[in-house]
Length: 87
Image 1: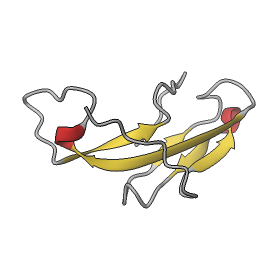
Image 2: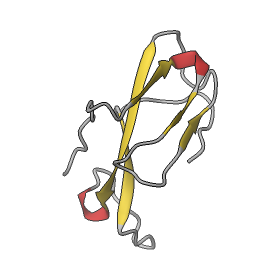
Image 3: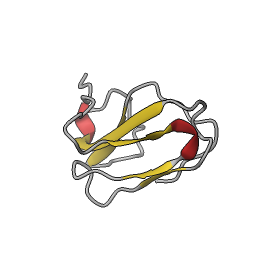
């Protein structure tokens, strides 16, 4: 199992949790994650990053009918959203 690292290399997006943000990263070219206001509870600072990884290195089993060449890993692991986010 490959666990994608939390990239704290200056490419992460840091924002106040309840304010929302648009997350992009050079580690996932062309991918935009839109986090609406109040999708993450609280007023603390949140850092999110993402990276493209080969599909055979995911920590989540991919269904047999899906054959991606890569997937996007969002970090930190375990972060949950109370409303839908858009990719």
